[in-house]
Image (cartoon, rainbow, N blue to C red; front, top):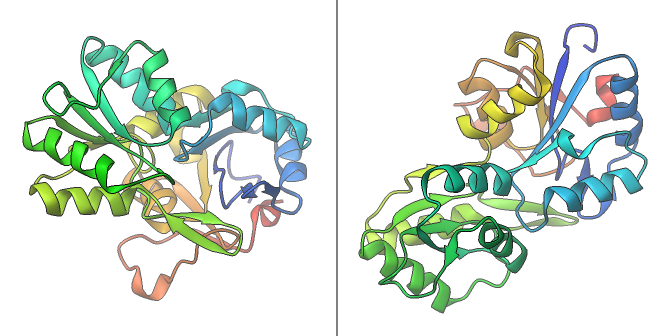
Length: 256
């Protein structure tokens, strides 16, 4: 497999690590691929940490990588907002680190539905009814409806927790609005940035991840080969007919 591909696009959570534990031999796999000249990029829909956080974590666990080898959906969203909505006001259902990253890019934060131009949804383990109603009222007033990611769940050791997808669904039902844009996998925004950084023909790339509706969907939608690992979320391939992986492997260790 490693002879065929020049570029490797790796998911992080559930593929390279789970919670704060590195998947067995994931560091050895990455370091070997880099040693033989393969291009590596990590892409993540997780917004509870920054790119710098993920870099420091991987580096401290033996990964021979650079910070520019990592992209998360916060970064993609932040770049988009700076380009098109730099003078607008946002509200986010998300955790403090995510909100602060967006605020630090110069975008104004508000919890007043009358002043909010953009509602952004992502993973929020402090989600409550008040946050939902601020978002819903802002959407009723015509705010843009965006998400950093659309994952229904987030893998953790021993199972999964609710992620942005569940919140998006609740707000869609409450407001009769549909999500307008999202910036993580499987969006074109995430893929374009990943391909730009590794500078490899998509036909010579492999996307590796644990989730059918994001990792494998991205590959299928943009005609890039995929490898589905079984170290993260549970995927029922029999009942998920729309997207199919090119390869089904136990873990990233099987790439070598």
